[in-house]
Length: 297
Image 1: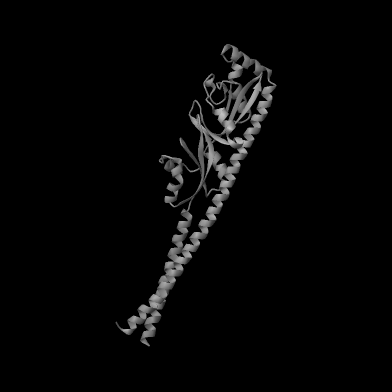
Image 2: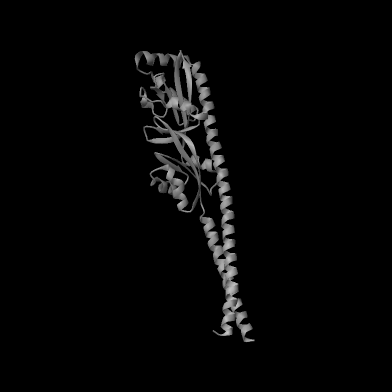
């Protein structure tokens, strides 16, 4: 091997290796910094989303308290309840009671249950008078802070709701009020507040998401616990938190999930790689020219 070739190869190696190391360090530093910032945004968004769900529950509880107070002074309701208890048949006033107040209070679910747990009036399912509702009201009352999500069945289908329960004493009998507000893709966008982040609520029987495409992907998973791992395998940042869920007869957990697809970061890193590659090529070209010039002197 000639001296000129040795000088050229050594010069190129001394230029190439440090520049490649600097490129990798720069790329890693940029990626880690933006990932940390994204994770911080997601954690902040999770706190805001949880606070918003709590606020909705507190607002719902205030409305139910007001309704419970008005029921205690409603003589017509007392008579309707006595009639239903004695005859087993509801009056039109009792059947429509929950629907009227559900509309007035801007709720999506309102149900009045008797002392035996049977439905006396339902705003979201008017044909359910006399149906056995199970222990839902009792279980709702036992949830810490009363904050819980409930799958609600209607004549048209079902939906997920933030729900609260209140017990009302009328004529020496205890009745239960259950009220709820629907959660859907639109309300999840209100929870998000950041167009760059997606909000998901997953439970055993369903998925809600601000992104329809993300919903379709996640519906293929058999369990909500699989979602964080599946998304991370797709290079999507995920933070999640359990939230109380009450099914038909037992409590469980839903999962409040915040996701962020780092597509913009990946594109920025690709652009950075291209620019660094151009810098490396120019540096190698200059080094080669200088090495040849030096060897020829």
